[in-house]
Image (cartoon, rainbow, N blue to C red):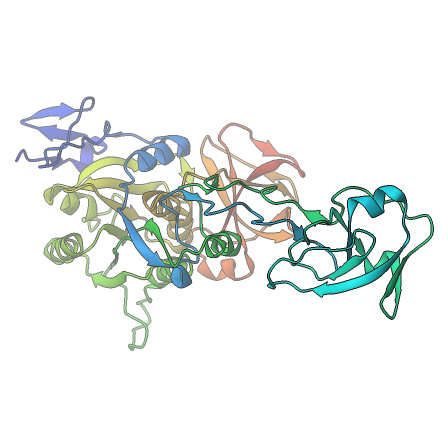
Amino acid sequence: MSRLLYLRGFEGILVHGGKPLIEGLRRSLDDDQAPRVYHPVMISVQEAERIVAQHSPSSPPVPCPLAKAQGRILREEIHADRDQPPFHRVMMDGIAISPHARESGQTSFLIESTHAAGAPPLRLNDPTACIQVMTGATLPEGCDGVIPYEDLSIRGQQAELNPGLVLKPMQWVHVQGADRKKNERLLAPGMRLLSPQIAILASTGRTEVRVGAIPSIAIVSTGNELVDIGQELEPYQIRPSNAYGFHAALNRAGFDRVDLSHARDDRSAIRQCVEQALSAHDVLILSGGVSMGKLDFVPEVLEQLSVVPLFHKIRQRPGKPFWFGVAPGGKQVFALPGNPLSSLICFHRYVLPSLFQSMGEPMRRHEQVLLGEGIGATGTSTLFIPVTLKQGIEAIPISHHGSGDLSALAESTGFVELPEGPLHFEKGTAVGYHRWN
């Protein structure tokens, strides 16, 4: 296996045999998948998104009980097992009459019988009579429409239509097969199974469904300053808030196979932790140790472990030092910056969408909101700004003191994405929006 050397002083250029590899880089792994070209300089947000999407492995489809399929990604086509509705279904409580009675202008009917939902079909014996019907029942044979109780009066066994009522064929009848025909597709692969989709699956009689397997995820926090929650800490130490923020978002999204660990700023400690994580999990998410400091060992250690880097810096604020690569077997490795605002934004902007994609969900279009106030910008980077969403569409920026100000996010609902280029964004400008949930 060829050795990939990471040179900090040369903007992350990969070197093999003393020669830089900028184009045509192929991963020296046992499988036949090859990562794209490594980007040694800062790339755009759109390029980073494209690279991550290209290297989102497809998790295998697995069977899942319908009762536990909420929120999962469908990995098979679902077809109607019969016409929908499967019979001419009564849509309103009332009476069902014959075409003869409707065409003749008859207004008074003897109630011949009563027909409820779930009962075997009935037949109208006398075309001048009617059958009382309930919502959901089959339309009785010999009838071609329903008159709701609101349009008639009943005295004893006699039904009388309101004056001036105009009747139409098959009124208040949900015609058999009007929604879908037998064997017609109901659900397509890639759909997220929410309550409507679960209800549709239940309507076909499915007890289980094939969905994308949930990947196993390792979260590794790095840093000498970190002390886990529940433990005493010194004034110069902090707690690993990033890891718990990631874990909460993953749990909410249905990723329940998550392991948390911590490594000090030490090459051997980071290597041991990363080796264990890669051997036991499908995806690795690291927090901290990815910038250019003397103790930022993460990129170096990852490449020593044959994790091929695909990019290291993105033209974005916050979150510029974001390292992404592919480990043997196609496993994704996301090394995020340590500052909490940067880390959480990168996680929601890139990591979560990639995880959903790996389970079979297509990349989503970004939600659009309107800026609640004008925002001035400097430089040529994409800006991510925490906001509170008002009235469902107006984004009000949250004041904060830089990428280390975690407490500023308490009242935020997500963050907006301001593209490169303009130096000022007017109030009312439509921009991309990413929700924390």
